[in-house]
Image (tube, helix red, strand yellow):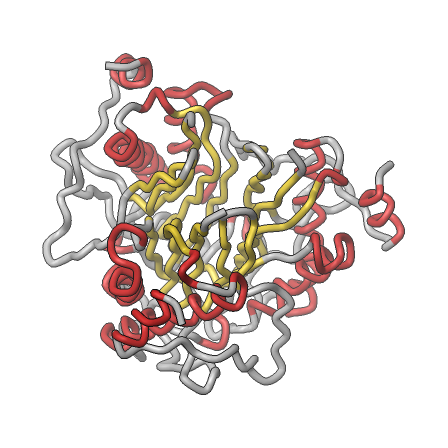
Length: 161
Length: 161
Length: 161
């Protein structure tokens, strides 16, 4: 166990197991990809403790309320960290966060995308602190997401050489 | 004053003051974040000279016309530069632009996203010239944006070591 | 001719000629931009062998079916490679792929964005193999795209020093 893994456990959180690919889907790409000192992170959704993608599914603002979407954004952060761990082995190698791009499956007229993606940012700050966890972010409303996910997030972080 | 700051003034432009966060909003992330020689820039919207986010708000193609949205894209560029200046101190350190991602709050059937985001690119070229200002770009139509902004832009640029 | 160029020909594929800009459009940005060992790639759409943007245009899920959109995603990959070649001269310099961001012009209720963008990933893997071609990816449904394209993709790859 490492410092970050311990911290995740101490917060009562857990990283999900590898994604159980939805029936019929083919996802021919890496979920995290190290290029030099950068780790690029594919678009992720929230995973349950069994590894499946979890809901609530649908449009935030009508079918999904803000607090449920915010929770999903936090789970998405944990899913991203699990993919990073699988790629680099040890989360203690992370020395900084970079860009975060949060996409919210938004009902017409829904404008609280930042509040939803705050569920991600808060998890990251709780785990990494505000120095290593510091990141830039966009939060936007997209028309549709794969499997009708409520939230999808991609990003990038930095590791030691 | 530096070369770029002088150039902005000579063009009759000005960088906005720090963002006045909209009532009730919590934006727990960096607006610009230096990682090595890269400066990552969060999603920004247009700011007025008082620091608030400014309109016109709503969907481009119906509620907002192209020329107003194009002007908003230019203001967004100035807002991004203000955030970069706060992060790195001196805009003269910028040696190149990188990726620009322009998101237009688009009415159904509106397809002139590039024309809107040209308001950003033109400001950047006027300030930095076509060599340092050279950038790649996407311009897309999103379903919704925070606070019903008409335009949101994120990007990345490069500074000296 | 180089190894990658030969490979493209052997697969029965071809890179399109430089983009013929649609009437009335002004695209004041680089289609690919080298920054150090990274090559940033602007948002591209599918091109025909005459250099024009090609359809099918419209929303995937209603106006455009999945297999046509998937084919368009593959053509988009070839268009991106043509821009990269124009920027760096020799595609054999590519040592790795990085981030890929796939945007699908999606009809309401359409959720098979990954299947569409697979048309891109498959082309990349066929040309570069799964080692150099390895990439992270997001696939999302956007509200509108320029010229009513069905697919737009941006990305980043790595070249030798």
